[in-house]
Length: 141
Image (cartoon, rainbow, N blue to C red; front, side, top):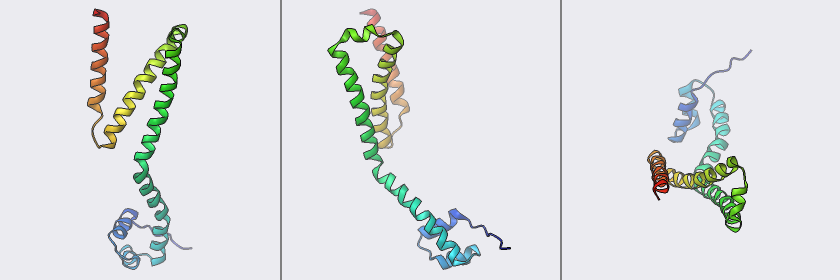
């Protein structure tokens, strides 16, 4: 019965990333070179997928924003063509449409800020403040 030896996977990966050859890693871990080579091969595909995602996440985010904006634009155009159509809908649907419009815009702004490595917390607070001011203005006006 062979005993399965455990390796410190994070250390093996770190050593490999630093350029240490598999035989030296195997010696340090107390396992055979083939064990290290098999492990490094198994994570090679995962590493490639992560790099691919990192390199293309801006494109995926942009595509997601475009799809969201397209849906919002279609709904808005239909409502502009028949404004009373919205009023004919039940109150729940009216609220959902308003939330969808606001959510799409907030999502766009937050996504852009995240892509630039900026915080989104203050943006959400600003949007809430603007909405409250508009509501007050509508009551006064």
